[in-house]
Image (cartoon, rainbow, N blue to C red; front, side):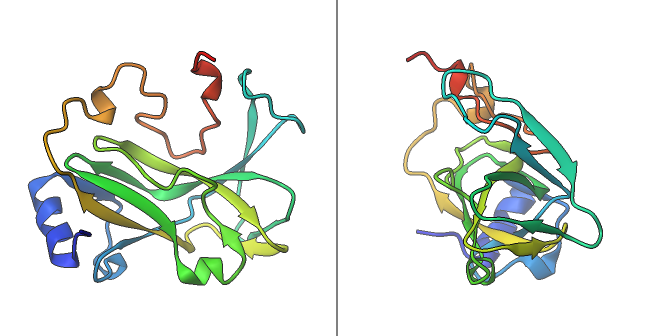
Length: 178
């Protein structure tokens, strides 16, 4: 079951869902549109090693936009800071974004109850495409949770992505033991 617009508004009033900045026009019938923040990043090394802390380089999208190219993996960020304290948030690309050949996440479309932060986007493109800060990029949908959540993500010891800032965050896979 997915929350409707009226249920999302109820949950926002209760404080279990938070979106900043919030714009009523971005609330769809069962989703909330999020926008591309002003920061992108790419990995500094051509080869990414899952066991090491791979560094990224941040850069700001200029007013005239920025062209994304295939075969380059970009990290982006949502303009919106969100909190979800009683539901499972899913971030999906908008159909208009997909029709431009832009994928906004490789695998990490699901958040956890208790996620608080700006969403890091895992961006790849099918052909060169120019993007702009503030453009609609995705939509959040919210699913109710069945049962009691014992430990929310923001309370979890070792939560690697809690409190993400308004810049893209690199993979923290290196913190895992394997």
